[in-house]
Length: 138
Image (cartoon, rainbow, N blue to C red):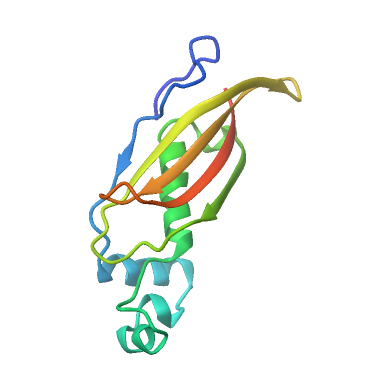
């Protein structure tokens, strides 16, 4: 976690990116166990193929968790006021995901100085997989 200061933050500033190892079956199995999301499309190759997919793929909520990690490596989790995402692509096995964020607004609300941050995950080809917005008290 880094120290942030409302007066020195500017619209356009970026968060330190978070780059993760390529997605593999072990990651999916561990996330399934940790989240209690055992949907077969994420862990069973035969099921995924019957559903028309070439292989299993990552849980959307795994990508959201990675974005949460991006944010909480920047600020303490108690500073998060809003955090929402939209799933725009499938994260396949072998994708190396990088999470990024950019300050897009500074404002005051409820007596707090806050920033709005656009966040996203993208694979090694630059394809966005999850996009979202977070509001952080600074």
